[in-house]
Length: 112
Image (cartoon, rainbow, N blue to C red; front, side):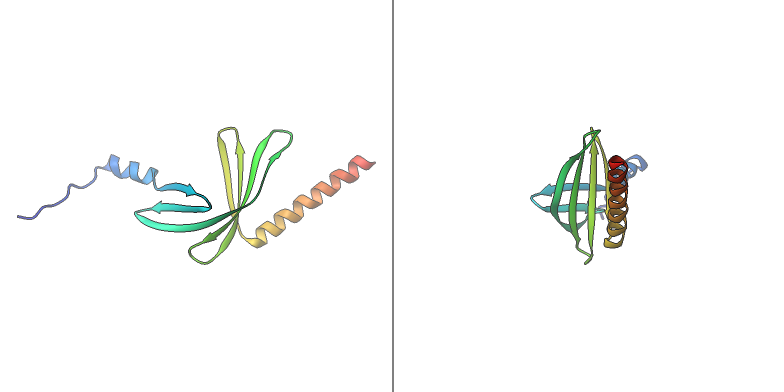
């Protein structure tokens, strides 16, 4: 007589998919559970500040992925909502340059 584990119901499978990624952060190490596999990312906090005038909390983190590549994680917190971008160095450079150019035009406009 063989024992067969019962199959998950469609509702249980949907619930598992909704809980697909569960993060547990301790110090600067984040362990991500993904379909029963452990993936590890090493996260280093680079900067954290509050933006004006709407008081969003902005966090910049270096993320070293187990797959051997690094990204810049930009986390923006507005009250209870989070927006997270993981970007490569080319995108970070382009984005940073655009922001610097915009800030310079604002300073020049205020000087007139």
